Length: 409
Image (cartoon, rainbow, N blue to C red; front, side, top):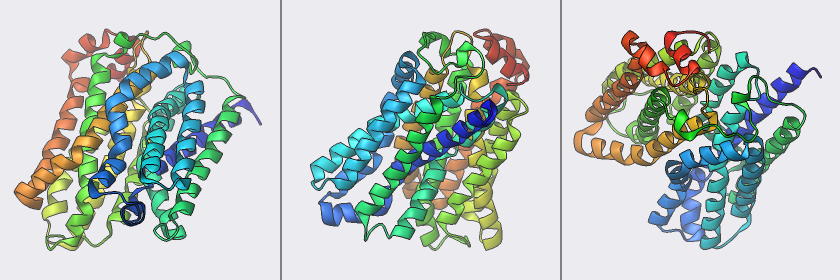
């Protein structure tokens, strides 16, 4: 096998391992009733159990990125995969409510490190011309992971076979994680030393430039929009106001079309990635109103699918822009940590914010809320396209300057 083929195989296996990590995030959702009836979780404890991993990421992703930068992405991936797998196996085998809760905490710790280490590796292992595409695919790891959850839960009948379902999910992850570790041992990093996956001394402060902060803010806004949309879409479908003709699961899968579209388009330039992200926000702003207020089933369904696809495009293109906005002397792992922490905060605050809006203003108010947030996400990216801001924002590093002026990422 040639070096390029080996490298490509490694990237694919890493991406599958990451998607299966997303499966660990969502695998408890089909078992909520079982945890309450058979394990003895209260409703409140079930809520904390479900949200636990998101809270981990919201609180600690940025310092985790700093730690990964010091230890190295390869070691971090190996250790975090073992921790996640150990927690997952324990979750499938243990009986008591306390032990299950502790197992999920262990899983959460592994997941926190893993979802920063993998994109850091995708910034160092691929050839430079592959990086944006690899990170664009990575941007869809959560919806792809949830889709696998749904497939497994239906195929195994998860409520009737909960422990077998949980064990299957974690064994699938472990198989690809071990394969990725073995493949990573056979190839080195591609590109310059700033993309190294080994231990580094990249400056924490040098990374937190205006471009990195703006992309992180935009990603946080995206997560608030997306999680609010998908959390309450089933409730909307069950109510009298919905004219939609497809299920919530089908709509969720269309996100992958946006991820795929991004992976095809982001190879051209980093500036194009940011332009596509801004365009994605614009489309979700326009689609929110007809999606939740339209009386015609065909047009409302089209609007909600367009909303979901545009969201997938936005997430993937924001991730694809990361390699180009990290300045010299900065750290990709720290930048990814900040992006993930913004997303984690969005995961925690998004559902309650959406619930308050729906409770107070109904689905019409929710449509306006999604549109306003989407517009705010586009505004976060506006400085990248304002000529007077280019030089001032580009000073922290050559890569950020090249991104803002439209050169290749």
